[in-house]
Image (tube, rainbow, N blue to C red; front, side):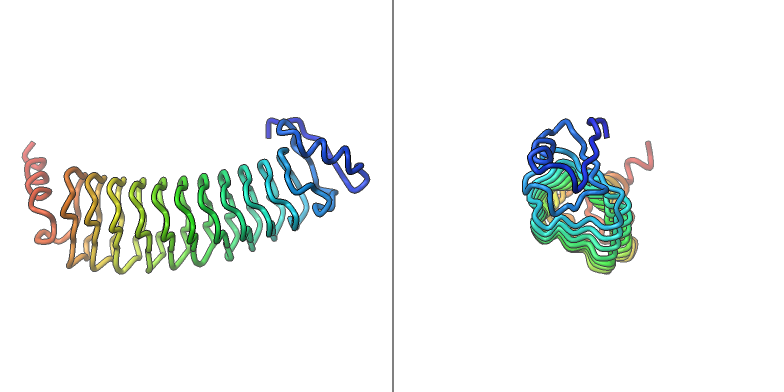
Amino acid sequence: MSNKVIAVDNSTEPSELAALANDPLVTLDATKLDLGRLPEHVKAALYTDATTFSAPQLQTSGSIHANSATSFSVPQLQTSGHIHAYAATSFSAPQLQTSGDIVSRSATNFSVPQLQTSGNIYARAATSFSAPQLQTSGNIYADRATSFSAPQLQTSGHVYAYRATSFSAPQLQDSGNIYADSATSFSVPQLQTSGNIYAYRATSFSAPQLQTSGNIYAYRATSFSTPQLQDSGHISAPGDTVPALMQQKQRRALHL
């Protein structure tokens, strides 16, 4: 936090609190403040050491730093800067549409049903990852999720979904590396450009629009379809499933 830090509490006058909350160059230390007193729209960053973070009326905010909170609830929040809620075992932001990074590493219940645009998402403890409206994101860390669903996602950084036996990103067009190690089938019908793809356990691999990728690891795929693939790194899949053009490229590479 590089902003000027100003402590506020329940004795702070409403007019002073409103003025400070409207200053994007200020970080409010709200540890001793009833967050229900915050204005609906806050330009300042918020910091608290409290063990709960509940701001029922907050609609817009600068960055939120609530790393000691074991629960995080912002039922009306629509737009925010970065959200840091490391310790929260429950993360609920049902109206959030746009945010910076979301760091919620301890939340087994991670709910962002309206999120459309975000920075990096750290949801490493979530048992399932569902972001039904998400279209653009940075990296997504959903390491422990057994299911991964982002049906509107079009552009992302790296996607870490190691344990997801179900991986669904039907609109994904551009991504970094995709780690879908446990998915039994891997289908990304709109994907055009990606980094490495790890689909070790997939018995079927379908990326009909994929043109450029890094390495592809699909050892078990008895069905491997990438008919538009023009440029890739190494492909690890049963030989008779790899497109002829890519087989030729790989054979040439071995003789260089």
